[in-house]
Image (cartoon, rainbow, N blue to C red; front, side, top):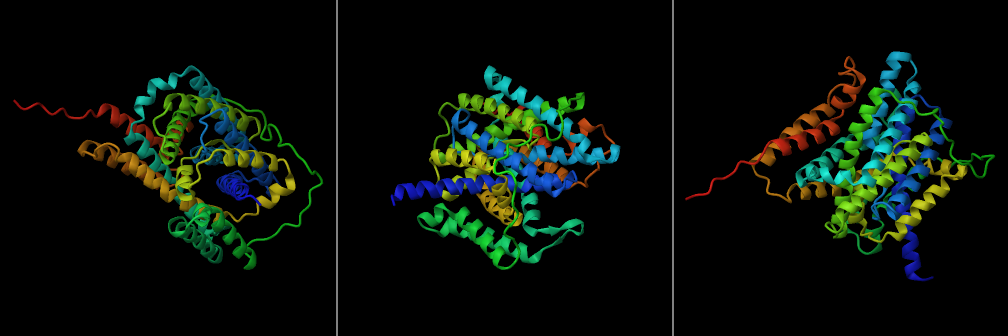
Length: 434
């Protein structure tokens, strides 16, 4: 068999696993937060897989046109969880918040499309300096590291007691992926993530920590359900939330595109038009996510770490993998099998990829000289935003919902803070010596 064909197939399969690994954990988190049944979580997973595949293909084909994976947005998930908790306090049913969330997602999609078509975003690109981009990437990695580590520990139910056997397998996968990506040669290095996930899954099966499904489905082919959470609704609070998070999504897009272009050695060509196209495609995916009652998906900056780890640079395998995920999401039996990938193993592989993302964040931060002013801005931002991440849940529950959305999200506060400090804390001018 032709070696080029084999390499292309393996690359496509690895991209497929990467897309899947990024998409599999957060639907389970949301399902637990909103009290969804097993069948409802499986249905949500199907819709998320479908949107991830469609959105990744749209971005790669008409958007940023880079091998840059889309996946569920951790920043939006924090809002989902928070509004679910508020809904429990107010009505006793967290699912009453879901139509409002879908309304905010729809509104954000329209806003992103307008920004992408009009090019208005070009007028604010100056706000996203290397200091801002690097700080955003660093905060994103630090915020999600807690999610991934908790996922690797495989806590059991409300007792939060780790499943030590499953956790040991997850940490084995984490170490294996790092070793293969740094010490491996040739194809072993290129497929480190894939090898790690498959090895971990096999060990889990042998030790009885994972199962093989024997479940059959009456429907061979099933289109994801439209408006599974009801028709989207909007109120003033959700409009404000959507506007603020659209700003955060712009930060995310710029950071992700910058990081991936840097990994590919092409970080200057047609940057403005790339961002415009990406925001336009992102707006479409937001509207699709609202219609299919899915989690919001965005370009994932961690893809840059994956590219550096595996050496993947071609876009064709990425596009094929995106189509494959969208198509396979239409087959319930396959979705069920894919959903059996143990969450701790998926989290371990993602955690390993974030090591390179932190390196990219530090590289961005050091693009400019870290003088006292920039170090102070970075220090203030990290202290406040990370401090917010460690505050008790519900601390701001007495504030209006819209204010809660802002002040309880460390990533959002940090991004706004670093931009404001960068703009209003002007460098001290050094007077010329006579």
